[in-house]
Length: 311
Ligand code: CP
Image 1 (cartoon, rainbow, N blue to C red):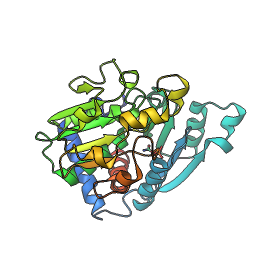
Image 2: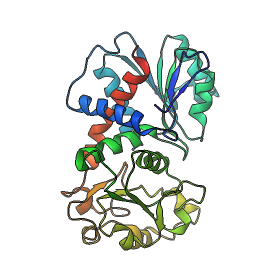
Image 3: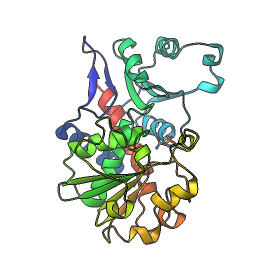
């Protein structure tokens, strides 16, 4: 699927969903669904070591990758940047090389810089597999995959008749980029993207989408609402006037949700700013699939690790 294969064919990495084909996504999602239903070999990755190498904080991605690797029988190492020798100036590449030298084959990497995981992949040795667990604002491919699995479970595998609205800080969101790439590849009928003009990108990310600043119009009749985290640091950049203003204009409340289809589902990648982009009533309500997304993260990451590391 959307893996980078090294020139000698010895390494495979999942870096983004940018060039994902529908067939490759379908195959991976079918495998992830089997994992979600408990059909897997708990020795599939026996003898293989996987390291979660996070240079940025994480709760869901890091822990679900660790659980996924453990459930497939891999050894799991957790790298904590705050207590590592990076605090003495060691580079990410030297860190990778040293852990590789210990015999670790799988790396799940999050880094604040766009393209950082691809740069490490280009330097990794044959047989090493890297998964991008989020780089800058560029990509978060396994979040995109788990979101598609969640949508398939809720709405079926034919996305062509569906309408989805993505709301919030699209400009700075790696989740949004990976979700949009996957939604397009899987033939989503209509993709509406909504947020303040300051948070909507004009770099081609929204190609093929209907972009609007009118939240109520964006919600009208949609089958799924994908909320994004307001990255509070953007307020310091002056891109959002205040949390109150943002909530008034782009916060998903129960009354607003009534504009969507009666059986619409609500998603959010987490972490949530409760009371800002989403109210408690919606986040914890009957239409919310937010914890289902988290559960699907484990199954999806099992499928990704198996695809890259087995055989
Ligand atoms: N959705 C997501 O990436 O969450 P974490 O930052 O907790 O991993």
